[in-house]
Image (cartoon, rainbow, N blue to C red; front, side, top):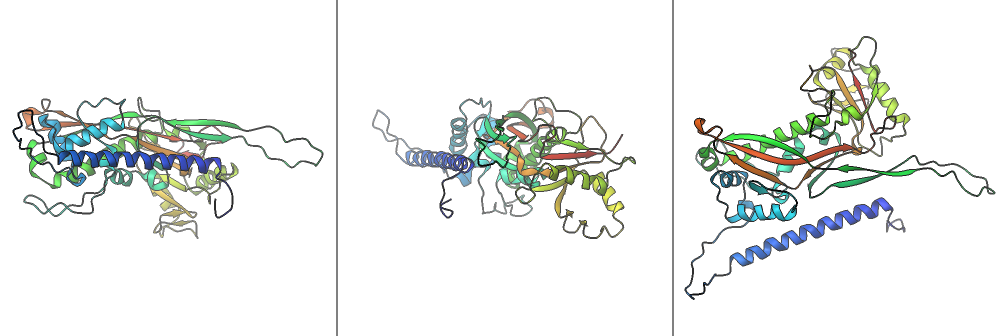
Length: 398
């Protein structure tokens, strides 16, 4: 804006305000952690004036681990960095009830460049990255260009301005036609329950369990979350509404199978609504059956002029991604389905951190404990009104 010698637009000012608030919130959290570190170094002297020996606890964030939180949930004893992070989780979302050990969003976003030591029982040194990074890596929606927000503590609204009319006027005309309206979509938390079975020995003796626990937990959460957002039959109860069901539809050819003709129709429908590929993040999502059908249609060399480049994973110049969740449902058999459009119009969010609860009794006869992991998330397409959606779908005819 300064380079163009102008004031910020409403959207730019809103984005600045949000970024400034996030920066202030992170600064306050950093100050709390620094105060906690300083207090932990202060000797405690009881009323009797007899010096009390207080064990020093390393509160460096790098010392925190999911397995340490799982162990605390298992034995009911929280201390050190686990206790501090539990308090942080409660502070960042005061309205949320934590029934077990809380893991704040700062831990989910923490990236550790170091590796776990090659201790006895480890196959090899294991990199422990951000849980949020792993969550995003397992979602084709994120790869396609959806917006992803983490650590949100309350509902978030996104303003939408639609039906804007523009027209040329003569000098004598007093004004333009009034049109346009402001609407909003809201991201709200939906509770997702994940169950992990681990032995007490695995939680305490194997350092590689940390990376495995994070990786598999992220994979399970992202798969269930994405299955709800891409369900082709119905909106799943208590889950985010399906953006696939909300998309406008293109009828498949009489033969029933999806092919290049349907893809061209999908592109034409979106472009006719004046969505600009240069201003958004356009992509295709296919289920495996659709991709297989396209490869057969385009020939054994998987090319048809410049239309498809399967080595570069593009269709007509747009990237494509594959997931068995696209258009499918647990209540129906897999079928050909495709989704195309501007995925920058789709917003995904995780709310706060995680809540880990230990169930030591259900599988006690097997010598393992069930970890119940509670996460909160949502997803929404901003433009979802029929006839003006930013996404369009095609499915195989019955």
